[in-house]
Amino acid sequence: MGKMLSQRLSNRRLLVDLLALMFGLGAWIGVNGIYVQLPLIVHVAPEGWSLPAHMVMLVQFANLGPILYTLYIKYTAWAYDKYIIYTLLVAGTCACIALCFLYSYTSIVFGKEHSTALLSLMFVTALVGCTSSVLFMPYMRNYREIYLVSYLVGEGLSGFVPSAVALIQGVGNNQTCVNVTKPGSSHLEFAPAESDPRFSSEVFFIFIGFLLCLSFFSFLGLNLLPVARGERVKLPSSMEMLPTDMTAPPSYKVDSGWKMPKYTYYYVLAMMAVVCFLGNGTLPSIQSYSCLPYGSTAYHLTVTLSAIAGPLAMSLGFFVKIPGLKLLNILAAPILILSGFVLYLAAKSPHPPLQHSWVGELMVVLVWIALCGLIGFVKMSITTLYRLDPGRGLYYTGVATQIGSLIGAIITFVLVNYAKVFQTYSPCAYLTEN
Image (cartoon, rainbow, N blue to C red; front, side, top):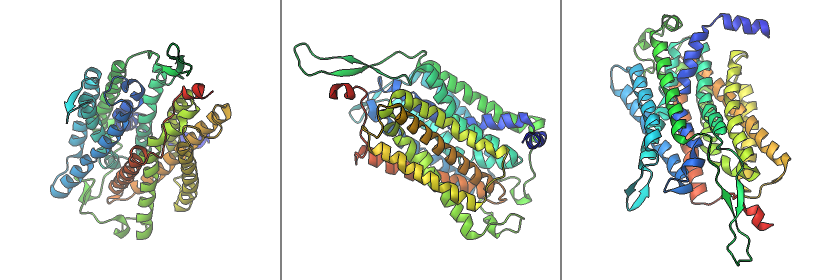
């Protein structure tokens, strides 16, 4: 293992790995940063706990970015991808810094008070994330294949870093319940007591903006530093100016040394869409329902540890051979089984099995870690597989990612907000019942 690791590291520039990782970190860190602040923001937002529903739909509206980019590269002769990426990273950085000062500002829309500043700025950060699937990731094909894994690890860390910082902030502490029984009443009433975080949301958003700024300069370094330019690959002549050439035929028709049967080509893309349907659209939306009944500490341990499980699984691409279709099919089975189990736990909220026991807490944390690790590894494997496609493989991978995520988010939004399949857990209801 040590000899193999040494050989792999000797064939790459660690500085370029770091630049690619920081570039990937900027993809979704803005959106993820806002999500992990929800336990604090909802107390000042006029929407209350309906705010996440508005945020989910805004992220889906941000798919306007990939649509506009697709039209752009289809109807223009030149696609200056790097300048679009510069613009998006600068916009995301400015939006996160502006959140520090404006996230609590509200205005009246259609007769109701709404967090217009927060939602508008989140839409900007969501544009960065959604467009990254069809722009950032395909851009990495300009560099040697080994650096795509670094980018994917960075993209995975965009979920872990905000969660870890929020844990340090104290967002995930178990809530204490105080007796609010009215004088003379025989009915006991308890309400959760909110504790002050170690530092404010303002400081948190400045930190996220700083990381986005580092992502911008990392991308700048990828394009300008000689050590990074030396790791670029020469694309086919028809694609040197346009890495995501819309006129290039799918690679299964191209005699380029990389072949994949037509059926397999679309089957693996469908697998990517299903994995993202679960990993990006469905599971994040019901995570609180499946974990919070086991306690806030279990919930935030799940959020943090599962967020690092994905990047760690992706980093296996540094050391292991990318699996073929047979192994991907085998890995898909436990993903579907574990996802079904998580949905079952969420549907049983607020009284899931093994509640109020350490066994239940350990179970839900381990299930989420295993599930997110498997999803991360499969996503990395499929993306790396299509990296070898000299045509539009990475672009199609990004499209499959966004389509799967969009469908998953919409279905879950309907189930949560209209079908009322999942019930909210109250940490103090247990005391009242007993």
